Image (cartoon, rainbow, N blue to C red; front, side):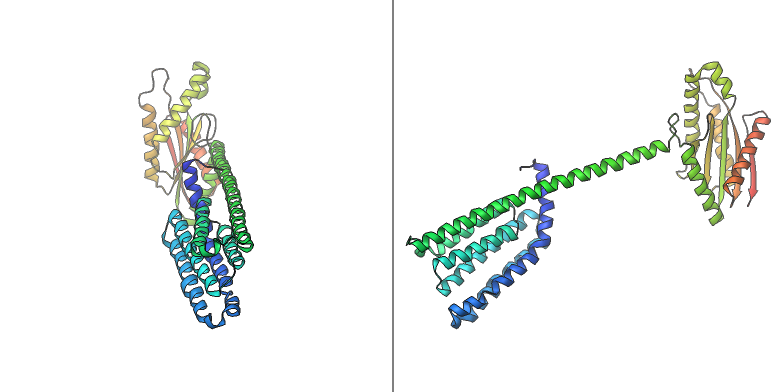
Length: 371
């Protein structure tokens, strides 16, 4: 299974991270078993046991562990695999030296190298290209170091060569299959990540839709209720100042009847835009809470600050309107409270709005109450 170049780089980094976590523990276990071969060394050549120990531990185990540790810590995944492969070729050289020192037969040599191939191709899970190069390197190293035995072509040598070739092919096939499985698993992981991202994006979009007024683009009544209750709770707990503006478009029913519903919708959009432009803090919430009624939550404000917002809204309504859209005015009920309950400040703002309408509309009536 081949990947496009960009995906191949991504997979290489992913698989390398997994291999790097496992390579050092796997190498430690395999090298521990490798050093258990001292038992065979003692059986075949007890007089050379200390030389065997030096080759196994100081010339093989420590260098390989050091290269793997340095590669995992300091090299990228491409150089890491090749440096580990080079250390394993060195391990094959040392293994051939040990077999020669013991005077083992070709069958013993083939068995030892076969086990070594199983380790490097299956336990270490190197990339297929690296594993193939490494396997060829190990086999060539073995042939070059034992060519005098190989040219005899007796039954034992032929059996050893056959076993070595079979071990190479079988272990490489296992390595390729493992890599194909890893690639398939990586695609499944990517698919799940994409699905998760799509679901999160869809949920975010649904959340925005559920909290946004479809006509005007400002917050809807649902979000207003949540934000208002939260603002009131914070004001109570922190004894902060909370402002609430209830804004009603003057004579909107007559506007709709005179100019039609499309013009009425366009008017509400324009009103929402002009109101939004007059609130300059991110913490302020503008919402459409009814047909032609809007509300603004002003957190941590002051009476003067809230009055300035109301004045800017009136001024914005007096500014020039589009030629195809007749202008409107608004009435505002403003309540300023310290540590209020949601019910009391809402009632106060609603009462102030009613009074603004009774006094002729296009004005702001303010109610300031303490908790």
